[in-house]
Image (tube, rainbow, N blue to C red; front, side):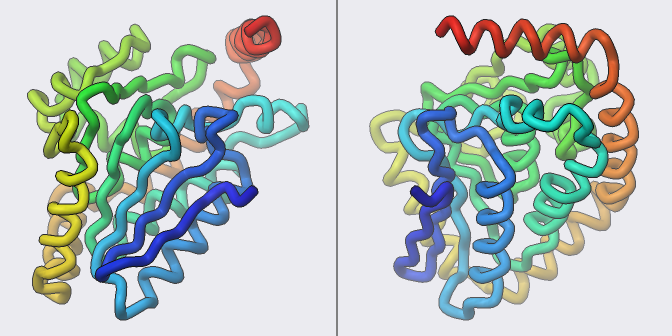
Length: 253
């Protein structure tokens, strides 16, 4: 079964994260498939807007920890340089609008991906979890930069430390989410995507470049620094203990 579903219709590319048995958690295959799909739709002149969403009732739980622990010698910095760092930069550098349609829980690296998108539309039942502190890691995937940009440094640190969920309604109130939908969620996503697809594409691309330069010109530098911090955190006794607890809980569930 493919880990990413691609649907093209009416100027839209809908990319659906598809590992439902793992809460759509990212493994190498899904990360690479998403990067490849974004490259393809960026080059497709018929595609004017991209929607990233999750299958079932979950957007994504972030990185699949089980995969990370299959090789004990894995370098977290090298992993980020191969996966999320180029993916985050790719989304931000795409000239076409990218919507994160957050249909359910969104955590960890998936939060970084959602924050890197241009617009976030959340289902009323969706929620966001920073996630990293739950397994004694530092924020990565651009979360250390993008989350404080949207909700402020104090809130970002609080929710990193506590690992508490941010509801879709709080996320909207704080400016992290653009729109929230309930029974009309799917219709709302498609309406906004269609409006963007009908817009001035060259102006949109130029505007995105302008926003990137004005607000997050240091994104690549931050991603690199996150990797340095994560390399150290990934080797800590705290992290190893937290991961063992996490994996034991998964075995019992």
